Length: 157
Image 1 (tube, rainbow, N blue to C red):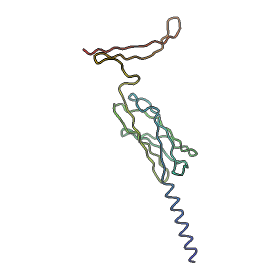
Image 2 (cartoon, rainbow, N blue to C red):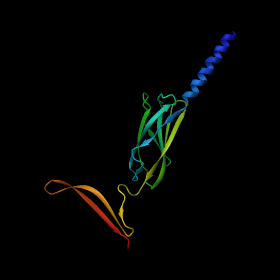
Image 3 (cartoon, rainbow, N blue to C red):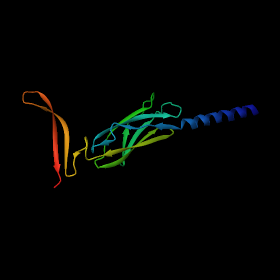
Image 4 (tube, rainbow, N blue to C red):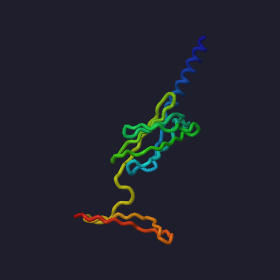
């Protein structure tokens, strides 16, 4: 009788230890671009894994600027997840929060998304005038395609 009680206590202890290790995990998050134009399509992806390296199988949601996006669940074999959403229509720095939830726990991580008015190369020039350059392709009347530079010059008056 005494040995069976000790074995039962040992089994419960082992289950508690394995259960506590299973509750620790990480979720990585990566954005296809961290600085975007407003309402730009953003792709977020990453992996959800337990501390022992096993994949976390669960539902995924993204929270951005008080909007929650439901995403496809993680891949049960790898823990990989991905989600597509639109950037806010306002300028600023926003926190993108990913939440992976399985039957027992929630795992979260976050990153910053910058919504900017300008997108592309930085303007060059002096204090009183600035030139924006953008390479473009143009089709001539004969059908030939040529690379050209579109330049916009702005003077301070």
